[in-house]
Image 1: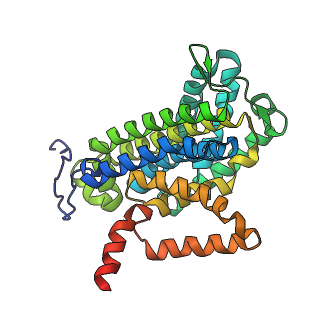
Image 2: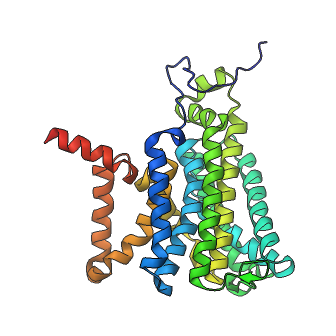
Length: 335
């Protein structure tokens, strides 16, 4: 039997699928990095109030979780409803661990516990595909919510617990919204840099091949099961780390923060921002968090306006908000 053939950059498979160079090297991607970095730097100086900064901090923590979901769903095509559960597990594990060992070890332990649970779950349901996998992840979310509410030794009475310590580095505490903003921004930059490395790795190309043509990918040597496990665990680890940072920022957590609504919002962040682009998840997180804030003047009809805008965005921007420039060019050519 011949040895499996690893998929290389820009290789064309037997089904005609061209595995092009990752988009992180394209010019418009670099332009997106500059725009996002510039906007993130300006925000605290334009909107320096505690409330506005608290909203900005939410955008950053959700953006980290959305980037993880982009790996699970956007790249590897696994339709998972468990991201909110892992977000909550990371938050509670972080609080539980940081009481004894402090913030940084607590953040690491919370992320590791989330990764371990994700690995056990993914291995258990490794034979489930498509709808069966989605249903299994939905069941995991419901079990997680029950654990968050009832396991008092882990999550406290009713799942409501306070975070013991704010983040600190060499005695400097990030105990205000302004300081927390910069702390979370650095964490997000690290998370995005790590995901950019994944984008440049063979894992991304193998995951795309698995998503688009699983039979062909398997025939050319792509280890389907390993790719599924690695992408799911890594994406869930992003959710766990984001949940820990969310807990540190909020100072208090309860099960209501990790329900079905959060899972749907993370799903919308990736869909609306751009399912095929890492930066789309970041833009989508900002859009989903900020849109309800912008619609406060339409308080009575906010839900209706929100729904119309969502449907309109999906219909008019099939590539997501990240593709608005290309969509505008198409519209102007037709005009």
